[in-house]
Length: 418
Image (cartoon, rainbow, N blue to C red; front, side, top):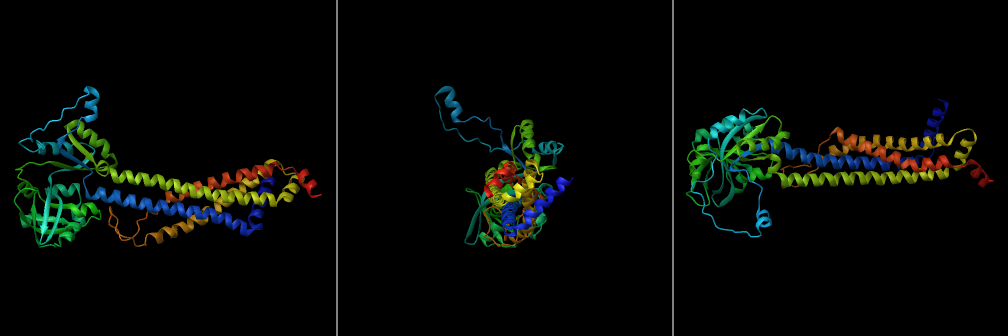
């Protein structure tokens, strides 16, 4: 117990003896912790915003009217026969559609993982108003059913979902598309397919989701209106699905494909390019964060080595009065740990305010998510991650100086001074 008390006293003495040197070490650790927390908060903020808004503003799974692909391609055919024959096939007389859609929707809603399912008719169309023109996706829906899948009402900045019925031929435009056309609620826009007669629809609402691509392309209308414009009778070509747990989307989509033979696309697959980019950024963020803390560790290593050199006489004296090599080694390991703990405490405190300030920094609109300020996510796990790595690096940085201090021979030191 006396030895432990003496070691603690020694560590405290080393920390307070040269405050400038201690401040440099603590500052190096604190800087690494602040940078790590800030980087992770910004990356997490963007990812969380994108994922949440994507889940809230679009179906978590979509069942399409085309069958599941067998996964074969030209390369597979070439490898088996050595010859590929490509011929032009006549287009089918009837466009693809989901047969017995009502029964399929009921069957899907009976699955325990699925909260709601809704039929829809989706197609690409050209929207025009005055001199403005934009290409977008018209989505024919049954408002009450689709509202259970996607909360459209929450994102309406003008109009109401029920106005689609009152108008008899209304459309709700995404804000990006409405701004591009220059149309507002009450205006009549022209909707037409690439080949077909133009149809005039009254704008009964403006939708703002914050997801740039959605706001630029989405246009909701009644299912019957979309079927009439696309000349599809009472057909549907899409089923939108909402799950109780959106993390299970990939597994449920595979199950739906197996049961129905129709292609089912989870929200992760629909946004695979963005998710891949986020995963790459996350990996780079971790590399940079660890790199910054390692650099801070080298700073601690340098300071502790200099401390050992400066304290040769003290080390020799302590060994002469009974301190063992183990005691000296533990003392300098404890010194590295103490520097790390102080740096983490200062870094986490500063990191919180840095992240809060970053959340107020104005930035240009992103191509994916519409935001006026930098997106941040101030989560406890960022502090735990940064603090844990910083303490580990600080302890590792203290190993070499501690070992060297423990191996010093007091006789050689004293003889050298004599």
